[in-house]
Length: 86
Image (cartoon, rainbow, N blue to C red; front, side):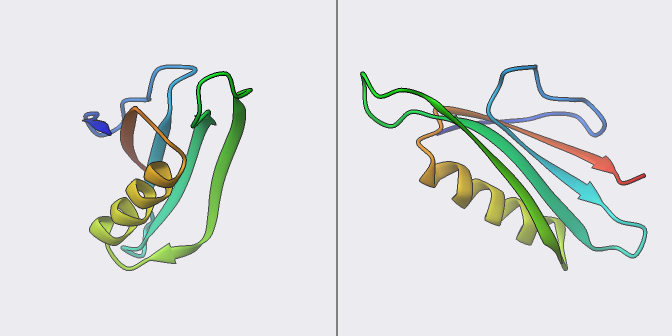
């Protein structure tokens, strides 16, 4: 899987496989993601989303969870974006 880490605040391209790590004011991090799942050729692609309700203690923990999730969904190129939560 190719991983493209975007500068803080920059959004992933529309229609790309991506995870977003949201920095919370309390120092914890939330994880969101969306991928187009298609593991086998000829298989119909399905959109999968990740909205993780439990915050992670660190950026690294959230990123590791997001990369593992994307890997399980046959992602070829994954964009990783970060931003401060509103």
